[in-house]
Length: 273
Image 1: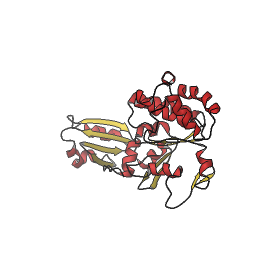
Image 2 (image 1 turned 135 degrees about the horizontal axis):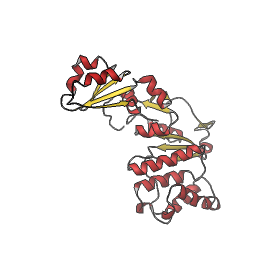
Image 3 (image 1 turned 45 degrees about the vertical axis):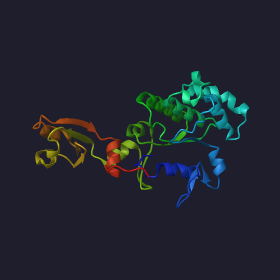
Image 4 (image 1 turned 180 degrees about the vertical axis):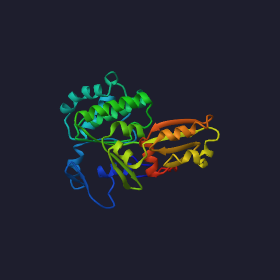
């Protein structure tokens, strides 16, 4: 699930958890209704919230143990699962450490491992890789792909378009609390966008928007910052026309999810809300 700041992504997660009441409509999860079946639903969910909710006073293994008790699980049920969960998160050597003694990436992996203690059928992950460096993000992606390979269902919100394109089987785009697109990533790109994008930047790039010898080969022309974006279904004539402007820098690439996101929601900066 992707959308601008304030689009309603976290609110959707909160409604699925029964923490926020919907204005209208009904919420069905795993064949059950929220809030009528709230307890039964929560027993089958795993949650990684947008912000760190680890207990700083407990060790990593104690964090998992205490979290499992929230589901009514006995210590005898939880304790055998802890080594496997820490191994899954690549945190075995840190079992006796406390959260303030590990990195941000390790904390996010611990939050993911902790959410699995009750063997949930559905995981709700709210921007699980925000703030992570590239190595930590890739490791988190690997773990999420392992979970989907094991048959787990995941509802994930993200601001990273490459993350959405890499991980999701089905994409939901929301804005102002409403669904504006839904489907497989590549199908949505083909449905809403031209196949090729040429980015142009450098001194004089903006003047090209008025150069008909170039723009006649583009289906759409957009500007963002100091970059001119030309969208086309036939890149060869456009690239040939650009050879008359050798001092400009160009990047020719296929359309991607970021292009889709910007077309559907606009290029204006949104304030949080």
